[in-house]
Image (cartoon, rainbow, N blue to C red; front, top):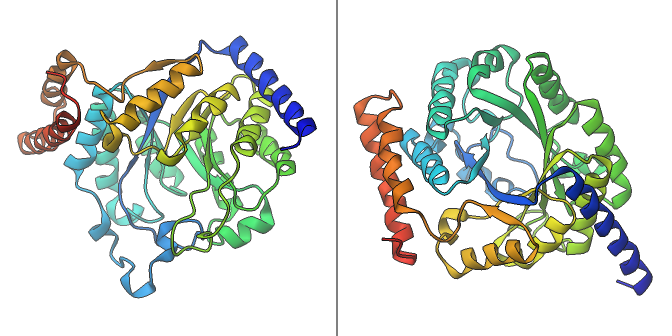
Amino acid sequence: MENKDFQHFQQIIEKAGKVYEKNFDRKCWFERAVFLSWYCSRADCKFCEMSALAPEIKIKNPKLARRRSESILAEILFARMCDWRMEFLSGGYDCYSITGDEKRLLNLIEQCSKIYGKKIWLNIGNAGKEFLASAAEFVEGVCGSVETVNQKIREYACPSKPIAEIEDLLKKAEQLGLKRAMTIIIGLGENIDDIEKLFALIRKHSITRITFYSLIPHKGTAYENAKIPKKEYYAKWIAKTRIEFPKLEIIAGIWVDRIEQIGILLNAGANAITKLPAIKVFGTKTGRNIEGEISRADRKFEGTLTMLNPEIVKNAELIVNNSGFEQELKQKIMKKFNAYLKQAKRKYSYD
C-alpha cells in the first residue's frame, strides 16, 4: 500500500473508531454460529466446501446429515458457560423440510432457546411466513445470507441463491416484527465501490446487525486459488459501514490463521468476532492469543476462550434440569456437555 493510500486508510479507520466510541462501550464478545445440519439441497455456492463434493457423494437424504439434538443443545450450553453469544442457528437449504418436519424443527428451536436462556436468531434459508410466525416466540430475528451485493459476481458465486428470495425472507420477518440481519463475504471478486449497494440493502430492510466474513479458499472449490483479502481491504468494508451506520451491530468473521487481524477489525468498528472454531481453540495458546489481540485493541472481552469458572459449570446441570425436557434427553445433553468439558480440561486445568 502506497503512503498516500495508507494515510487515507488510516483516516477512515480513525473516523470509524470515533464513531464506534460515541455509540458503544468498548465491550467485545464472541458469537457462536450453531449448525443444525451439514446438508444443502442446492450446494452450488462456489466458495462453499459443499460445492467441492462430487455429486455421487453428496448426501441425498437431509435426515442423514442432521446433528443429534443433544449435540446441538450441549454445544449451546457450553457456549453459555463461556459467556459466548449465539450468532444464529444455521443450516443449508432444506436441511429440514418445512412441510414434513415443521414440528420437529419448531421443537428444536424452542429447545435451543431454553438452553440459551434467550431468544435466538435463525439463518436457515427462505422459511415460510407461517413457519416463522409459529417460531416467533423463541426467535429474535432472521439472517439472510446475502454473501455479495455485486449481481454479476452473485450469479457466478451463488447462482441458486437469488437476492430476491433473501429479500422476501427479510420482508416476511419485518411483517412479523422480527429483527433482520445479513451476512457478507469479502473477497469474492467485488470491489469497494460495491459498498453503496450494501448500504442501500441495509436501509431498505432496516438491518440491525451484519456479519462480515473474509473469504476462506477451500480446497476443491472454484475459489481454491483465490487470493485472501488483505486485512486493510477487509477492514475498510467494516470501517465504512460503521461510519454510515453508527449504531449497527457489526460482527467480523476471523479464522485461526488470521488472528493478528483482530485488532484492526475492532479498531475499524466491529463489535464482536465470529467464525473461529472456539471449542477447539478453547484453553489453547491460540485461545490465549485471541484474548490478547482483543486486549491490545483496548477492548474488554466478555466471556472466555481460556478458562471456565467451576462455579458457572455447576449451573449447567441446573439449567438442563429446569429445561422441562424429557429425562432421557437431559441425560444425553449432560453426557455430551461433559465430553466438551473433558476436552477443555485436557488443554487447560481450571479445577
